[in-house]
Amino acid sequence: MNLKDNHLIVSSAPHIVNPVDTSNIMKNVVIALMPALAVAIYVFGMQALLLTVTCVASCVIFEGLSRKILNRPQTIGDFSAVVTGVILSYNLPAGLPLWMAVIGSFVAIVVVKQLFGGLGQNFVNPAIVGRIVLFTSFATPMTTWPLTERMSSVLQNTGVVNTGVDAITGATPLALFSNAKDVPSNMEMFLGTINGSMGEISAAALLLGGLYLVFKKIIEPTIPAAFIGTVAVMALMMGFDPIFHICAGGVMLGAIFMATDYVTSPLTTKGKIIFGIGCGFLTMIIRIFASYPEGVSFALLLMNILVPHIDKWTKVKLNGVPKGGDKS
Image 1 (cartoon, rainbow, N blue to C red):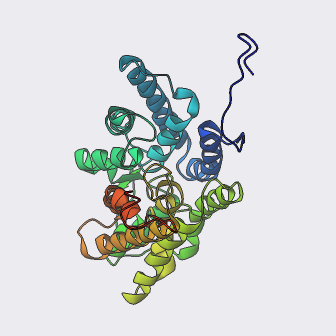
Image 2: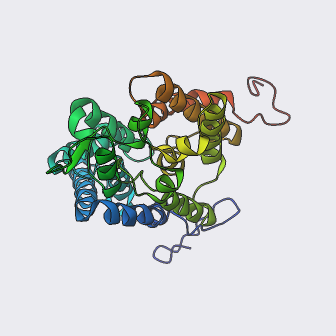
């Protein structure tokens, strides 16, 4: 009842108040992403934290400014821009110049998200597009990683002089694999003592975050299981180590934190399975047959575009409703 004008407001039952809203969901995602950040800081130092803070601050500022310019209600309090900033930073080398990270944040928030109407109306994952635009625009910085202790020993073992070198181009596990070089062990990749984009290096940290999200019922395991399972099956079919391909590159980050994005993933369980299988299939096709050793971002982008069609193909049919709907 509205006490001010003494009017009774009537609405249909059931009257359920759900404490889970966008802000609550996004805060839990941020919490789930923290183990990967801790590993990145341990491996790459404080530059990893600085890059993450830069991406988050840029995303929040761009979201606030764009909403104000477009005369739309302010949404920086829902934490979606924070999540985009963290995930974008995880897709970048820890040593990337900060001004490039700001450009990626602009593309993700303004171009991909706000120009399409804001949260809920973007048809592809903003962080993925931000990463792809940076990769195609600044290929060398995007494939140059700070030299870890493990990669320093690899250089010495292969006869490369390491004196004065603090960064190396193309020395991720997938790059080493594609060149048939000394690849890190599965345990090294699981724990995260390797080179790569800073949020992708530790499968253990990402898995921990994923289990937290499943426990909190923020995500369902359907898409990650279909994605990771397809990568494993295709690796086995092609004669490769499935554990290597699961832990290397962005499979874990993509499967758990990007493919499960509510806005850009299918609605039905059948659709989620198709989506996950498609992501895993395209990832392995790109990894094995393309010149670029990683394929997760491009696979996710292509499958995001197909989501409306997947939803249409897997739409639930209501019992008792004739095909094409009730036309009486």
